[in-house]
Length: 102
Image (tube, rainbow, N blue to C red; front, side, top):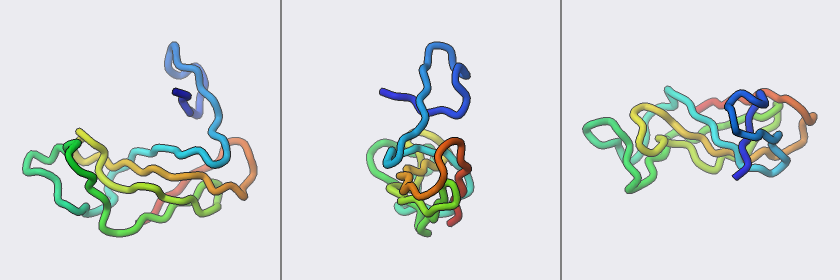
């Protein structure tokens, strides 16, 4: 498994590599709105099914629209969303910002 991270040597023993064009990246967020189906009463998302956001998410990487592969609750966390997105390219290489809007 290759780890992608912004600052090399941030985590001891983890070698980081810059994301390449076409890589699927995982982001964690909060406040992305309702999901379907609703989470269980204890609020902790389970592994039994995907709980996707009901409003489609748009994401920009380096100012270029990215393909959102999944947007919903992260498994086994309460109130944490996970966004899987693929960099479509077209922006300059190197460090680039990301922005997501529901």
